[in-house]
Length: 82
Image (cartoon, rainbow, N blue to C red; front, top):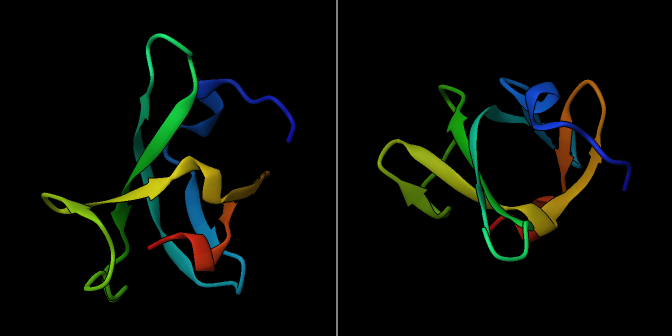
């Protein structure tokens, strides 16, 4: 995967690998000792069913290992989301 600065990720839309828009990136959770990104905190789009996803208040936690590509959207593997 290519490198990306955190400021370029701010407010990017998250899309699943099957083309569904999930929501918008709000923040990231990192491991401060290793510097690895652990999770993305995503504000889901209205109408997106979040019932089977890991939630923190009104936001979804998406494991960063699900990220497949970062361009105009952050594309995630839909099978790794839950």
